[in-house]
Length: 628
Ligand code: FEO
Ligand code: CA
Ligand code: CA
Ligand code: CA
Image 1 (cartoon, rainbow, N blue to C red):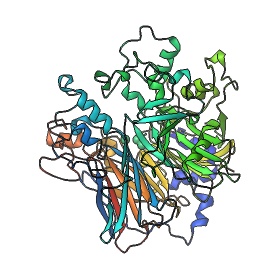
Image 2: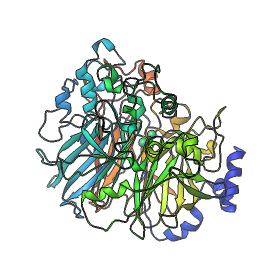
Image 3: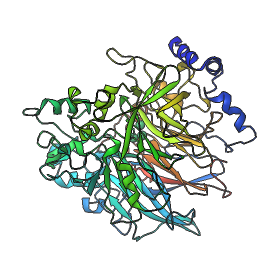
Image 4: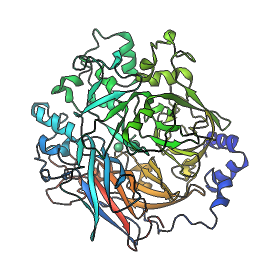
């Protein structure tokens, strides 16, 4: 037993904590257990851990169908070619790669029907060895053409597809007037305090008002007035610093804080704006939450700067009693922070994308978690609490562009990679996943603390924040569950998992948890016991955890949405076929441009095929509610 962990849990939760540690009951359970008696939230038979099964598995009594794969046309565009020979222009009319979070919007707009609707989803990033027939910049710079860069940029962004329930179930409507792709080149407007500021101005956009594209769109949010929020996460991977000569000291410091220096994708070889040395403000134009109206295919998306610039995982909102809106977002990197934005004005309950203006005015806060089980939302306002010129901030725009540095100054708590946030529909309980942080406790790094209780946090944890009202500036918190195994003192009741990432509480109150064990560790060593990545259903009152779905080899399970009647669910399967050490050992080969299906050949399983990220659709065979 790691005494440090148990001591901290006991300090925080008293006897309940001891009970929880001994019997592996989550720490929240004591008060809530009684509420759920007589109300069995989870009714399905659990699925087994999948050890290298190259398929999606759902419980007995349920069916799963592949619905929308990378390369499938959004409307009446070209069909997918299995040899990856589709051109950039064709990719522009097809599903992007690496599906992430998604949302269902009923049609007619704002109805509660489940007959017709829009599915809107993010395409987070790409695998160039699968996207191209002969690999990307990584494989060979001599064959890395401008056409390849463009195809990569078009495989990023967002898809909007129209779907309709037919006699044989839900189908994609083709052609559709709603269908749309937003990519890494789509013109996007800017609003909020940093719009037009000198930090966003570039040679191509001297007014700092129009940005080309959005990318690394990880998870999302959905506003009640009908808009979609897409969150820009690991934008630093797209910018290359060819030289630091002539770059201002302040700029160099900011690049270091935001990890800007090396481009994983190599777009700068063919698209100069991705060379940060030549265009030092271009990276400042990414790392935002972007809002658009999915019902209007001509609508211009808007980057909302008031909510700060960081590696936004997702954004979850709740409307306060007075109509103001609280929006929660985690910054997914080791030792980064959890943020909350509270709008200045309330929403009047009417429809229309113009309500997005509410997200331009308000206060952004970063969370501090105290050992007592209490916490404080620390305001990030220029001129207050050391956020002044002495500490290098010039104005609120500067502060928002460099909000990580502002949160450092006010003393927010560095977390173990905050991923998704979800708010319970009936309470003001906020759940946040910390996916893992193996650097916790390393030399020169922050030690474990009450809110991040494990050094070498391999398996991650889920935290619960209890707000009196979502506009409160203080809160209390608990560790909802420590993921992992007995050896790591996990507190999961039921089926085990590691590395929680996607979280969504549905309208029935079921907490859906999706996992992202990185493919370099999947099915291997201490992670072997968890099998392929998975999705579980959790009763947030009792902590009862049941495995609902397992994904194919090398994938991450990320993104889940349901129809309002909860009878149809869509889940995204991201990056099947990434290198998994155990598969490689077995086959003695490595996934490459020549061997794209070395690890997985899901979902098409064609001999000369390649794995494809895809949306799957899940229904219950008796037509009932999912999860029962
Ligand atoms: Fe895109 Fe942190 O996951
Ligand atoms: Ca994620
Ligand atoms: Ca993740
Ligand atoms: Ca991912």
